[in-house]
Image (cartoon, rainbow, N blue to C red; front, top):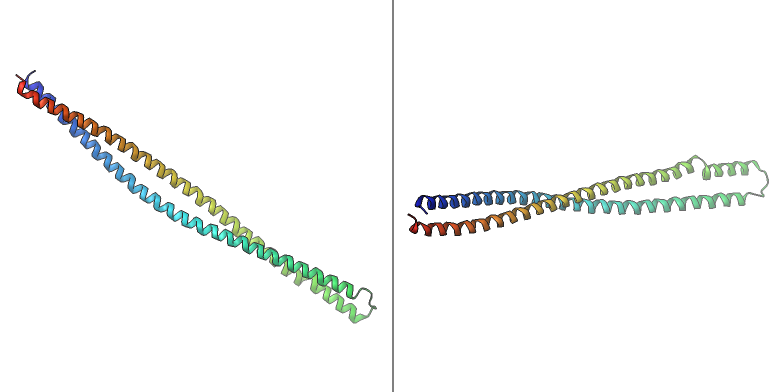
Length: 194
């Protein structure tokens, strides 16, 4: 083999080592970019879990509030029914006296008229308002949960890319080792070349 052929083989292996080294450097840069993205995804995921905890707490509080208002409404209705029943029983067999009739009419209006309906409807409105806020909080919880899952997918994909890049780096390192062996071989062959 001629010296020119040996030098050509040496240069060929040196060029491959340089190309593989450049490729490894690009892969390290891509890994750094992925790690930066991962940091952002993990930060966002932490924020989302915090927001999710707050929304869950809000939902629990709204459920408790709704139960309390419902209990209040039930007790209010029960007391009103007892008062009406008492009024009805108290004056059922009383003589038809004008002031008693007027009193019964006034009390009946008080116990089942506009004021009662306004108070009862206020409780119904409060329950509906709490249910509406609870529904919005549940929707928010669903949205946050979806976004957390999306962050987990991004993290999983980034980790897969990093693993792929590392595998490529290992491959190129093996190639560099092989090419260095070949380079040493050809340098040794220089002494035998003509």
